[in-house]
Length: 178
Image (cartoon, helix red, strand yellow):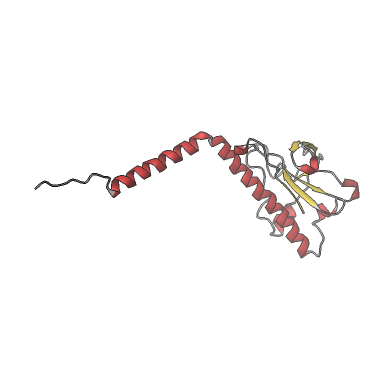
């Protein structure tokens, strides 16, 4: 009597092939464009920072009966449409800041020479620290590379000056208004 041999793959062989394919796919995926992935990661940090600043401002406003902190409250009708870099510096805050958002029509924003100081939000516990741009080597607490503006209706706009293209090949609008 002749024995019949069934040919095929064992479970272990299949698992090894699947694991090798997964590793190769991951390597190719990462190798395609790691720079864009880092840019996207920094943009995510910028989104997080902008949202944290806005949330701290709004929570402080709610806790104080609708009044903004003094530095924002001081922005009145004469400063409508002005953009201020967030930071502690008293001068030198008028950096180049490209804004791709709809409300600023894809132009360079004209930032005021003095920064707007939000350290009161840190001192009162609304922010752990005032965040600054993750990739700008000159960004610090003196000049964060984030901006703030207050319109005629009292709405606050917070945005980033350092958006990067990432995988989308176009810098996103990292700006919120409330």
